Image (cartoon, rainbow, N blue to C red; front, top):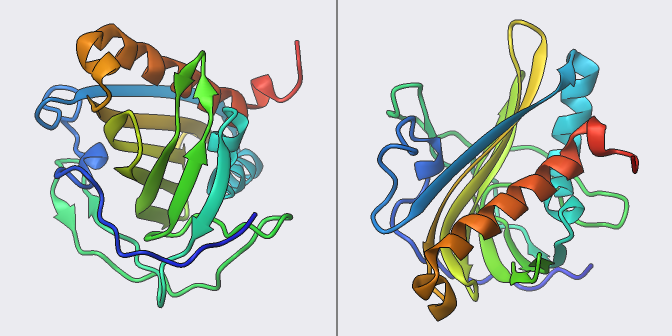
Amino acid sequence: MRRGNFQEDTVDYAAVGATQAHDLMGYPPEHSVPAEASWRLGSGQARFESSADALLSWGALRGAGLHLTDVRPAPGPMYSGVEFDAEGNALTASKLDVEQRFDSDGTPYVAAGTTIRVRGRVKGMSADGELRVIYAIDQPRRVGFALGTVGDSVVSGEESFVVTWDDTDEVRFTVRAFDRPVALLYRMLPPLLKRRRRELFQGYLRAVSPLFSTPS
């Protein structure tokens, strides 16, 4: 896995951070299609920590059959991005001045500002694109991040991946997204956009859930 030079590209959509808006499903960004799914992973601290580690080491994407061909951390101190409260109000952003971690093959863990290039297909549909980590969440019982499209994708938008450990001891994995079709095929055939998103969500679940850890 190589790491290229960081480029000051910007994401190709306006509603940055909208995957954290409480009313995303009812009021998605203009011309986009929202999606949300949540699954129970188990319970307890050990399950939360193992699931969070898998998520932050790009496990959801890789387990869905996607390949990370370039990981470019942001230069300088890492930044946590924008977070929202339960009512959708923006919270004060803060810096995450932590040591960069790497997985066994030397790939940097998720950090806000990191740019990645992803290649792959889901049920014959392209999942290629350049993506930016819009925000990262690192809390005692809530860990996750969001990816926004920078370019070279058939869609434009954002998706978030969050693992939570609630007060009932339950550990859940939640994915939220909004996509606007860019490629002509998806603009002409809107159902393909929902099918693509559905297949991606199932791939992420297979990657993170212990129920899919071994073949049936």
